[in-house]
Length: 352
Image (cartoon, rainbow, N blue to C red; front, side, top):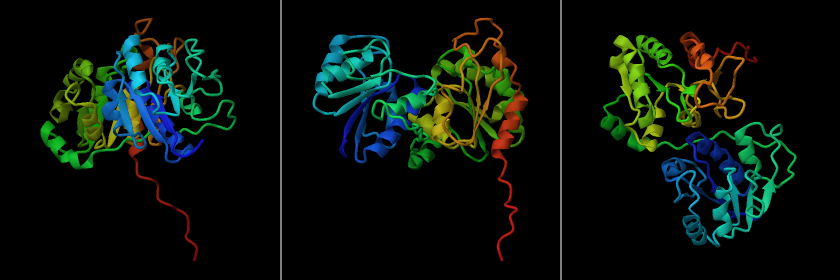
């Protein structure tokens, strides 16, 4: 494949999956220096893609998630004709492969998914034992079919608008005088991924007592959870700020970059924190870190074995949410202490 290859990635519909797709962007850039890489994805992801090194541009998907809308897909596909050498289709749905077909992109690569024969002409059969992680499944598509070497998974990274942070702090009435603990108590997937608000509140209160402040991140859908969390912190609430539902995605990225530590459920914001290389503690309940772990170094993943999990359900089928309720705040505090501990001094004796 020649340098300057033009690749269109058909991106996923979830924040965390989109962040992980930056690993694929890096692998493509390594394999094809000078490659032009565009990403076709839902409009909400534009600010996220703009922060990813190696992505030239984001193209808005004109069709909502779950809709077929053949006409709209046809028109977009025809407008992209002649612009790409390869399309890499990350979702497994049949409809996600239509636009590359309509654009007549010569090489259309993806996993078999929903019987996409004829839509994809470089179709792969997934061996989940070989590629247990989602990021590995993404990155394997950067290589020829039958590639036998291990697939690299470089950590996703996001750029930060450093110059704009002072104005952002002023607009939200924030400062960085105290260390910032970022909490991400929501999860768009459903309540079976949410550590209890009372547990989060205990962690927040403990850190405030140590001289920290707490910023609670999330979408407008997470506002009620964030308010319940802060209400449960008692006297510590004066050092807590709810940002859930107030920030745009790019603003959340820049503000989270200021956090000295992050505690999160398995969520899109968890993957953003990892891509910002923030010290991160993650709570897993109904899902598994063996499929979508945070891709970063300074991470502690906490979960407990339960007979009924991981169930991958949006709500606890048994109603007890034991997989999360039984993870005590003390474990999170201990994990934070380990992550934030200064490195041990080098005890080796220097050579004379």
